Amino acid sequence: MASLGLPGPSSYHDLCCYGAGIAGNIFAFVLFISPLPTFRRIVRNGSTEQFSATPYIYSLLNCLVCMWYALPFVSYGVVLVATVNTIGAAFQLAYTAVFIAYADAKKRLKVSVLLAGVFCVFGLIVYVSMALFDHKPRRTFVGYLSVASLIFMFASPLSIIDQERGVHALLFVAIDVPDEHVVFRIRGASG
Image (cartoon, rainbow, N blue to C red; front, top):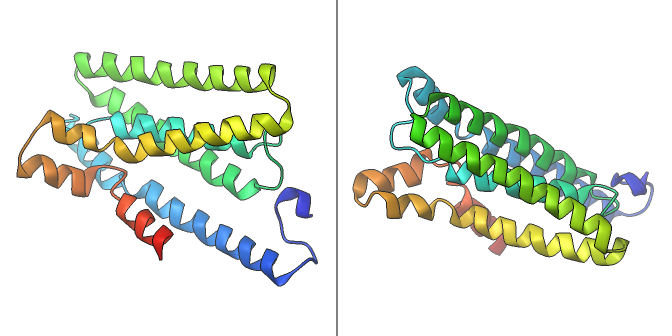
């Protein structure tokens, strides 16, 4: 049972870790659904307005890389990491699809190219990690890539600030961007 990442009859520490993992998955799910009001607005208005798909694209890449890290090809015993990132990837892909459906032609092309790029990069990561590395170095390689993708994901909302300066843009960053939970995660990690 421990090989699946589930607590066996081992220790109180393992049970606490598993409980924290379940709680983390629940919190992550809540964070994944947090952009729903933004996408309801996009569907209702029939336009992406001034919203950016960049945070969703980077979040998708992060979820895919972290999901790959958690699969048995790379790591053992981290099933909760795999589940939360699979769910996250599905949400980010759905958000990106809605964005593409309601964007103007120029944005649609840009986001579609970025989406194709995400899948190409992910495919390359899978190929390189399987072809060039044995199991232990593969885990290290993909682990470093997952950390890098996490940094890019958390930094992606900053791209919106550069696009449109002013209080209106900052309100979008604080409220309507999917990574407004960055502050929550940083606070949660530090104390």
